[in-house]
Image (tube, rainbow, N blue to C red; front, side, top):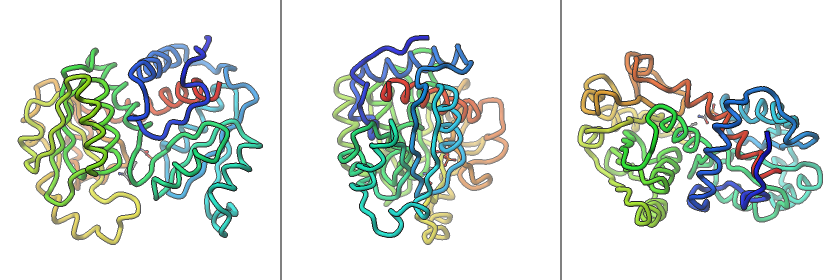
Amino acid sequence: MDIEHSSLAGKNLIAIHDLFLSELDLIFDTTAKLKSVGRPLDVLKGKTLAMIFEKSSTRTRVSFEVGMYQLGGAALFLNTSDLQLGRGETIADTARVLSRYVDGIMARTFAHQTVVDLAENATVPVINGLTDLLHPCQALADLFTIMEKKGKLAGRKLAFVGDGNNVAHSLMVACAKMGMHFTLGCPEGYEPNAAVVAQAREDAEETGSEIRILNDPVAAAADADAIYADVWTSMGQEAEKAERLAKFAPYQINSDLAAHAKPDHLIMHCLPAHRGEEITDEVLDGPHSVVLDEAENRLHVQKAIMALTMI
Ligand code: CP
Ligand code: NVA
């Protein structure tokens, strides 16, 4: 299959807010095509992706690496503790040097600014594979999954119950862009970043999406087409674990909470799950759960992103 040469060619994917609606539509269309074709292609033949990881990963690492292979290219796993970055070489120099070897860089970092600095200094596309602030590839795979299961996204409601974290931020902006309503139910003090909420509301004005931040999990889940969970303690927050476990306990997604959603609701989770904390086994493994489809769609959506940006 041919990959369309579009405004995404050479572009970074740092935040969904930076994308035009037409670019999101193209990513989703290309994802659907790549998923239906399935077999290995040669659209990125001879090209290489550098994958920088400051944090652990199962899905992101494997899906990007397999995705590059299936597009005819190769991927390099670079742990920051093995790079000279870990010994004080700057992000800017790392970005400039890697750009002389590879055709794209994917990075998972603590500080969001690290990915921004990489993108500013690299001359090849940089893809955000999760920062403390955002997780755009996850949100794109999640919306693609909802589209597969429910059709058109506009007017549907996604309820994120838990921490106003990186995954919540990217989902909120993605929903706003696509005209989906987004409600977050979180304990007081764990609300999403105000600047990201402002970006989502700006995008929502264009599409009629409603963005609501509540502290009541039941009100958040009410009438939702999809209920979404993520861990209560994200990578880097381990010292706060005990306090978070206590504060988030009323925000568990269990069958009582799910009963407030639409009868045909989807249960979503980016994974890894902490079973028995943010979500019960019964719900995670139940008939409404699409968590494995979300994980699989990371592969397809990231193949589309790489093919469109690294073409
Ligand atoms: N959902 C997700 O990004 O998973 P990993 O941390 O395993 O990459
Ligand atoms: N919010 C989680 C997502 C993991 C994929 C974290 O940042 O650890």
